Image (tube, rainbow, N blue to C red; front, top):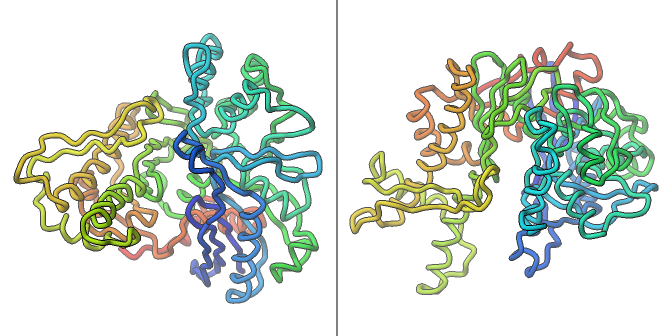
Length: 473
């Protein structure tokens, strides 16, 4: 049996066909997500806006290519950015741009604080943020509150997560969501499994503007005619309710929940461990998992884009002084030079918090202990990779304080790990664990495919489905 997993990512949109009988990926089809429409002036203000309709067109394109190569499938699972917000009208059409997870308007000034600060003040007495509802810039609830403060929220519109809207477009239904996505809003009680109505009303918002929360993996509907025409799939093919990309990536990477720690480095970076009960802290989030239980997640704002900024700095030097074009890859050279530098970078330290942390969004990165012997491109590259690793280790330390230590296997996912052998080596050394890497790429799309198979009754739950995962190391 074969299932299609669709991942609506920030950098790429990917469709994967998974043969669940063999645990093998039949084909992976990806396309660059070139749908950002943020104006240059707005980028400088920290905005992140995208053309949702254009992203749906790309999704249909990669689905069609996946079916051409991989053949017919028995169901479709969808994942994608579990943060961010899209307004949808009564007809199901998008209204305005999709506001992505990197958007910073939540840090705009509001009544001698910020938008997020004001939300925290309103909710302080309820203690809701200790129950999984924690607003951050780029979250659905934060953007919705910002729109309300700006007087831009009116009429028959509802807020939707992007992957939920994609499912609705595929099935001709209104967007619904599940707990894995809803928990990424800042408005959801992960303990009770409900929208926090009292908080929502105190914020001047309405529960009616939020999607209904369905059971994870429940079938949302069947493919409709116009989607069938563009993809070659069968009309009525079951599509399940979407799941959050962090949870999908965990499901598509980890076969042993009790003993594994997942480090995922893509555009951003996360450290995740499965726990049976809610156990969050100021630095960690307890995110609902599809099977029940939770992922304890340290979601830093560091990751692949941190290394990309250093690459761009080197590109800028090349343009300014050596006639470079500004589009050189440079990663291979950076890794080679970094590998020639000894552990510890000869004392050079990098704290790569270039856009702050979720708790302290105004913090910035630091380069320290700079000397004449360690201020080279290789030292800078290695120090940044060691700084990324230290951020992940700090988050795991928070988990250990919550009694979630004792993990024996480090699972690595995301292109930031797959394409950087030196980063893998640094992570293994710092954590004192051997790293396992799934044989397949596109772990989130793989997890979405597994979720579709569970939805169709092939497996009893996602944990059982994880037994098909194969590893290359």
